[in-house]
Picture (tube, rainbow, N blue to C red):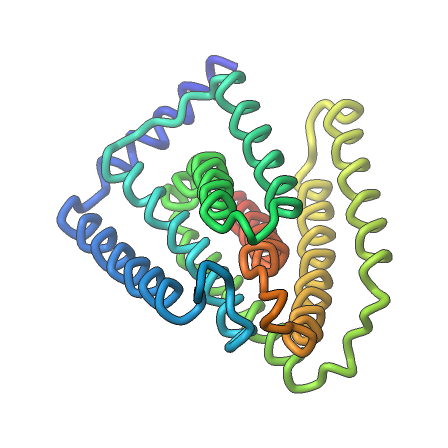
Length: 267
């Protein structure tokens, strides 16, 4: 444990030593500027009379997905700029995981009538996710695989999205339950392997990683198809819920990114 902790500290120190402070500050300013622009668009075009409008349903969903990733990018860039070292404190770690899952659960059940509260819960989810992601972000910067992982994920997402919008008939709305059970089985098997197998081999690690990449790719196909249907069914009297709508697709993309980053960092 002490050796692993020392290694993690060395990785953080090395990444922080490599960092160009002026360049890092420029990245932060650019990300903040884009966040402000998107937030301004949401306030003026997406939210009207204290509720989400149905106009531009698909675009608005993708804006919230982009905003989620930009906020995580901002927090990680800021933590790196401040040379924050993520100490492996079990209480902090499990506290963040609990906050993340409670936030996900709450976002599914809090009505859009309480739009301010819904955004606060969403920000709590983003904050917990960003902190949990930070160690992997630093490791990928250390191994110089960060950009490669981002580009690979972006290309995959673009191809999946284009496929669904060009040929929506190729994606069945009945595949949801199948994906759920495959995901559940995969999670159970991975948890069991952690207790049964003392040292996970590279082959086993890759097998689980590629399995989950395939599952979340399937989920992204499915969720994009569901997005199309929800856009058709949205009525102004009820309004939309772009936070809830974007959450599933964000988690699909984020899980793909995490698995790809982990694979590339181990190469």
